[in-house]
Image 1 (cartoon, rainbow, N blue to C red):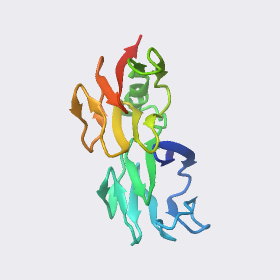
Image 2: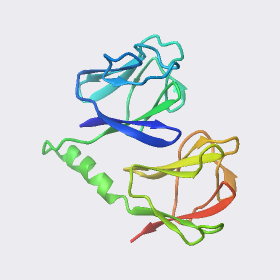
Image 3: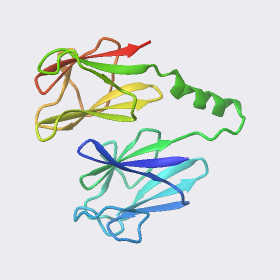
Length: 201
């Protein structure tokens, strides 16, 4: 079953299951996913099922639709893709359906292979605190100043910049626009606080 996580400023607001062949997104009430924001067009975008894939299509919206930060008129979605609609972000997730085939069995096993990630606070008032990354998306930082998210994907944990004039640093280097795959013992600097990423178990 495919679903969308509606996010604002790095925080997940609501989860929607894509339950139709054509799933409409926009400001008007008749949409399957209604976003009441002036930056969102009445009929902004739609997600269409094509075989085993889902395709996002912009419907000529005023402010456009993006996929992973890139303007997109029509794009095939992949697990973890981020769809930008106005100030909102829709994260696309597709849970494989067990049909007994070898390929699907392998896909189903991938998420279980991801070890549980943990962020440990090394400096500041919360020094020693551990944040277990058990959720799909975990927000870090201070809203209005600097915010980042750690997204759990089948391939591992990815750090992304969400908000703030300065971007987080990993091992002394500023991260770019693309989500960064974290490795064991990576050192993260965010809002002047040093954090360490590691796997548990």
